[in-house]
Amino acid sequence: MEFILQPWAWYVAGPIIALCMYLMYFFGEKFGVSSNLETVCSMGGAGKFVDFFKFDWKKNKWNLVFVIGLIVGGFIADQWLTPEQAVAINPETVKDLAEIGIYNAGAEYLPDEIYSIESMLTVKGFLILLVAGILVGFGSRYAGGCTSGHGIVGLSSLSLESFIAVGGFFIGGLIMTWFLLPYILSF
Image (tube, rainbow, N blue to C red):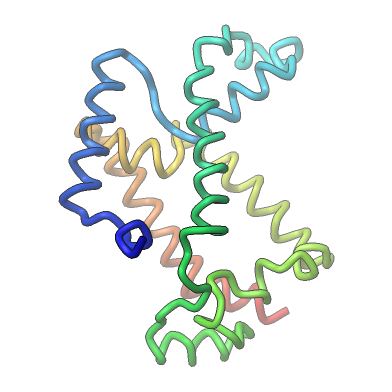
């Protein structure tokens, strides 16, 4: 049972991901989580209002199964494959997080100050979710894909656009972590 609880080594997981990307490329399929939003909108009838969503969503059924697998796999990993909720975090990081209001950093996988239902149901939490959702949705659409699409598929196919997008994701993550998140959490 101990083997199951350990993450796969990079030299095992990497080639498996590469094989999957090759097979998708070979069969002419596109991969990315954000493309599923387009499919769901098309399924819901958004094509009646916006031409962008007028396409045969049934061609993307396999990708919807992938997202369902992500959700089910995440649930299984959380419920049965996670040995403990504590996360080993550098003591300096714990101190820095405490300064911006995250007091139990490392004690749980997801800090309650951000991810608890109570935090999300406050006006501040709701606004954070709303603005973050809009920015992520707009950003992935504007960038022509999400982090998984550009980071895995785009980089593996040597796409210059994906290289630029992934660089932008990292820069945006650094700006969010070091400048915006401390300001947002201070309210």
